[in-house]
Image (cartoon, rainbow, N blue to C red; front, top):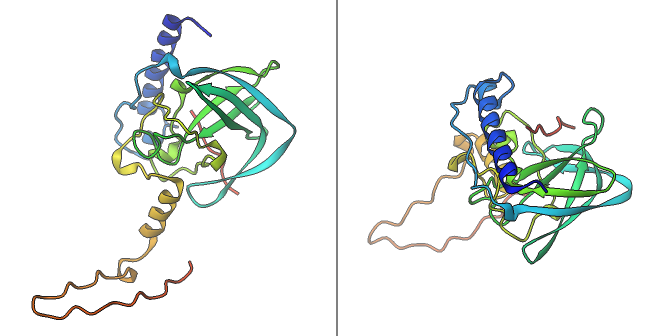
Amino acid sequence: MTDDHGWLRELVKERAMKDEFMARDPESPFVAERIPFHPLKYFPPSPRFRVAARLERREVPEESYLRTNRDGQSVMRHIGDLLFRVGSRECRLRVYHAGEGVGTSVFVPFRDASSGKETYGPGRYLTLDLNESDEYELDFNRSFNPYCAYTDAYECGFPPSENDLPVAIRAGEKVWAADRNPRTPNALLLDRVRARVPAKSRPLPSPRPTRGSRARARVPKRLPRTRSRRPRSR
């Protein structure tokens, strides 16, 4: 691992460059969708969340499908699992390769005990470049939000349930805005469904009994049962 002072300078520089990109670049989701931008929010840098990790590769990569915020599927190749510790807790995360065009870069989506509170509920991302030793520094201070955390104009893959960490990762990017922070991936999809339902088809609230009227017991009605673009990362 790099020395703490050099690591901190590099991290601060990276965050400033990302703010500049998000504020001005035509490919920024804020610029493309004309969303007012304010600097991204982060936890204070913490060396505690820089951990040594080992990649346990699969003999044969397995085709996997990550559910997306549009209820579609993002096709990935599960190449193995990263094994590491956060404090006293042993953890593992599935690692995915997006296929042609990304070289040796791999994708690590995850959720943790801070998701849906201080951080984006559907999850955050890390990226790594594969090496021959399969030994890595996993730096959660560099974890970032998918573009769908800022706008619904982008399709993003959710972490699988196997990548739900049992600890709070209070490092890296925080949630962009309180009104864009569903607690879970399912909550995000439910919000999108509700937004598509016409107002006149939504059930009206039941009237409250007026004073002096007799409240009737209500019998619950039976409720009806009710390939996409790859996730973009920066």
